[in-house]
Length: 436
Image (cartoon, rainbow, N blue to C red; front, side, top):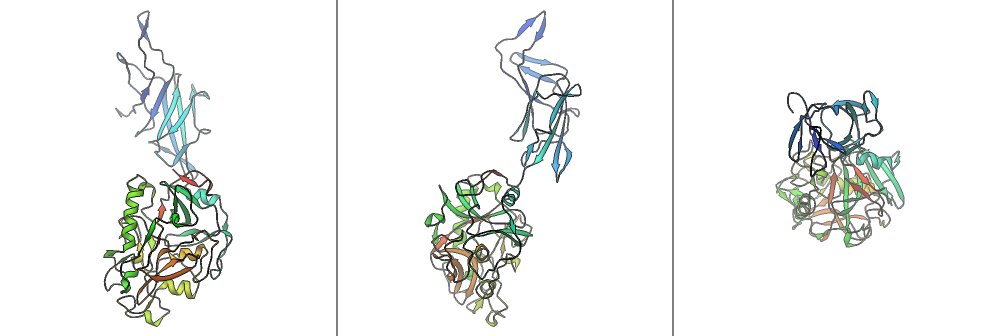
């Protein structure tokens, strides 16, 4: 920018020669295309055009003015810089005029954070309006009706129950329940199922295949492993743990180490990390339940009999909850506004409470909801400990628990960032949502 003006980049066709007529240079230009990129003012001028055999200085006359407006919550506000993402050019509202008369022949294109305007007449003025793109949350909710009330969590969900709303640590969360078929996502070269929309607007996904959508079989998981290498101490129920601490964070569990490595190789190193939320977290609720006397006092450490909160909520009361009882058990990145900020990578596992909300019930077979795979796979929710037990989904689709040293499937869970948008698709397995 020079002296308050903004410089336009001018793109033109190459010529092998220049024609001279009566001593006056005439430059034949079929189409002058102006590219608006980064700017710090609303009006731009160009002081020179480079030619093949030199530069012609001239007084700018073609594009006199560009004013830009960006939609914010339904209103348009004046802006100085073309938005780089999250917006579309409103082609019906945007226009150019010559001598105060709208000229419909002038073309416009918004692509990769730049606006291309075809200008061929003197005194052209343009006014650009940018609309907010709907986020993934907006698109998903527009495609689904949200049920009122709370389902009966003591009964398995074997038909398509659609979407329900509840609260999590960030606000209103919308979760899929039953035999739903429109919660498929294609992202980073893998297929995923949407578990829920988080309260901050991010989208929680669980891994479900590579190459093609998988509903059953080993292809629904990345591999099998232990949750932890030992089960002789209560601390091993933790996704992270420390000796003699109920909510310790000193060490990574065996399964966390594997998931971290998988995420780095398959998401971060391939350039998809910017689409994953740095705000949302994963709840590995280790809070000892107050519903059992053996959980009081020294419960949760050593080899003391301990009934964790999930055991009472899901086995006894059939009352799942998406709020994390202790923020130290809410595994988040350092950038997050909540939780323990202990994660190095934004990847985790599904919780037992999410299984219950999706249609699973402790000790009850369900082969008809979308989280049934015919395989055993881990959640990250502790259940009981004298020996360390964690909930998992078994081959019949029921929620059960067992020692952390068993070999069960790993299904990575990630959260798409709240500002991602959907490029195409309707959420079915044949036409999954594709993420920009």
